[in-house]
Length: 523
Picture 1 (cartoon, rainbow, N blue to C red):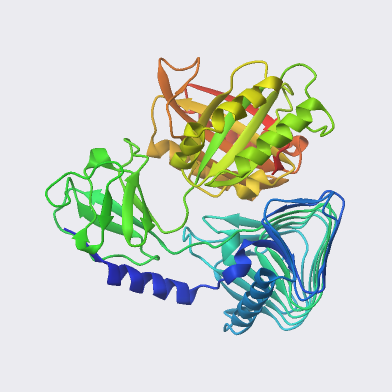
Picture 2 (cartoon, rainbow, N blue to C red):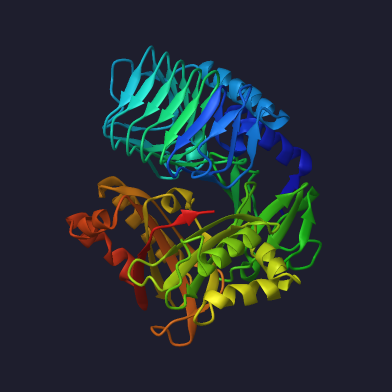
């Protein structure tokens, strides 16, 4: 039996937190300036936007943001203080390698602290390889400035996360036109994002302005604490609780809690007791004040994942539009209905963000992707009194009923969703399979290394069973989302030898597949 005390878990989490940089209250901000925040054109910010001690935030609208605007208020002041703390912490780390005089372009770097005595630059592609460690941290220290050239990229592979990448800049940071950037930029002076920059991470100017032009900036929040996986074994022996760098802990096969089998939605209090599950009862476990709840049981899983970070689900809805409906024209009836729809959805408890866009191959089909804290959060909205009038109002611009299901992405999808064009490829299988998951991950790794114009990729299983003409009865959908700079970039990659050799990985066991493109907008 595996005993996990609250003290043991607390000590592990505290030790992990001490080793990782954090933005504190600034983590919710996509952009935070000191003197001003200025946007030109249709900049899209996912997260809060703020300024302190200055007061001026201009360019919204036409720019849009999904969070809250904070102008010289207590929240912005606290965020600036926490950003300063993060800057000093990053600057105080001992370098593991000096890159002074080198260009970051063309390098592949593992976790570490990389130092530039003065200025540094990025021309081309920088690859950050986490080596399979989801908690891997990358810190870049610049004595003065950093400048990226046009169309430069920071590519994250093998589990690297934007929230674990920090750019500590001793003066000003300038992101060149079309740069695809990853990580939090904390500049002692100013941050400038030229036209069409896509940044997965916040832009923080500690003593001057943040300036943007038609950019997409997405805050990453906090990475959360370590992910620990409990894996059933056929042995009755166990090892001690693993750390984040060794995340597998065996537990007895068909073990029970207090002599009873673990069931869906059961909460476990960690007071020297055990966490265990029958193989047929495996699923996801989350934490809430030292309680763990087994929910959304996936019958084909062979492990329990103990995830201390938020693990949301994504609602995927297909909405057939009536002829002539233009949801992007806010002065039209359809545009007004759609705007009201988005406002209603994003006000719901548990709704994190919404994305939408018409399929380029079939503009009469609108695709809506909504990140929820959990499937239960979405269900509460469906069960509420507000849902009936909401559905009736939305139905005035639809030519038929919607189709929807939920997807549990196994890797972060926000980078892909932020791209100019999103490829959505859906593969249909009779059931879930770990072999299929491994094949999809391998395909994504090959694409990340060889595809020009690729922004990011993620995949996940449908939580519900789905219907499709290729299936005998119901089955499961594996949804692959790939962000591209353009449809043309995707089509060019399809002609490469790397694609032709790796795409059979996706198709081998699939009963059917379909693909389309969407120019997603965030709300």
